[in-house]
Image (cartoon, rainbow, N blue to C red; front, side):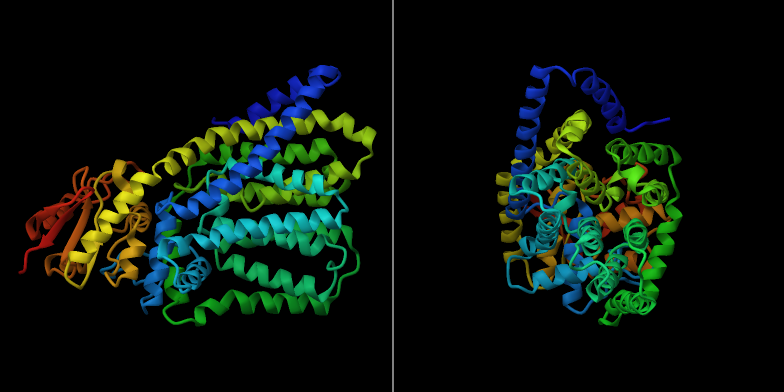
Length: 513
């Protein structure tokens, strides 16, 4: 059975740290190393998030989907299509990330840059929430910085997930701000808390349907610490939650029935139970920290609620294509509670538990280095991606007005098709999206007749492919099987012909029937 390397490393380093805890030289080294890790983590996370804004590349195909569909929605098209629609771009995400991305796109900034701003803002708001909580706990400015930095180290273990435009960054920030509402002394128990929780929970459910799970430990924490509760305020918070949860579906072209339809299709993906074990062992590292630092003893009910919710999330994260990043909304909360518990202790008590934090910090730092290699690799491609994007722009400038689509070649060149939002913004439309097609494939949903008819009738006159790789040879990430059938490829070969090639892309034109 697979066990998360994070848990294994934490246990091993915990034993090592305990063994050397009384060695003065080792303690000095660990203290200096810990401070260096914390500073480096914050600087790298902030720097890489800014660098991500500059590169024209999205790091993930679902990010590109949110950007493209948001731009399409602004033009009056639906976020969620019918199952038999000729256009294939709908996903199971709630409407909120699309609407927020569309808002930033309306700023007039370049569409890809604007599409990344929501994730970046989420990260900034998370940092702000940590500082506000740290101030409320009367931590020094240095300790406020270390609190932000410790969470930064852990976030780096999630690649760029803490600042991408997918729902995870929204949930990460909203759940932490809910902790702020129930913990901040000037807010806890007031109308601000109940209304704020209703708003945050409503927006979260509009990002991912299961998001209410993340709020259960927050509510438990408040109830365990506070006996006085107003039924009227609770009822008001629930009403606010319901109003916010349904509000996006009053926007044009955001149909709740079609959203539910796509959720039902996603339920056919199934679960990989070996991943459940890996997910459980992953989050166990953070729960173990709560035990060792003393939080579990002081807030027993909330700790067991965390365990129960973590198990449910671990199961939900066992869907093909999911994974430990489903814990991202919980991780900053768990880290803050551990940090707060540490600073509640006397100086002598802190000395006795320093080795625990040292072991945990080194564990997550090693994990961060391993995960950030991919981020470094993608950021280093920026000069080439700028040239590639410029090549695509020049193609669109010479093509006649009308629809044009970025087609897929193989997996090695998949990222070269993540510029679809730019085509949509230029009025070229959106015929199909890679992330959506992979989800549909996992749900055993093939191309409908309407899509094949659209191909044959030249509804998309031009297809632009990455120059490298055979057209339509992309494999699904879920099953590692061809995403496009032989019938689809045959239809393409019969009805499209290659007309020209640029430095990075090849252009195919539909043969007029």
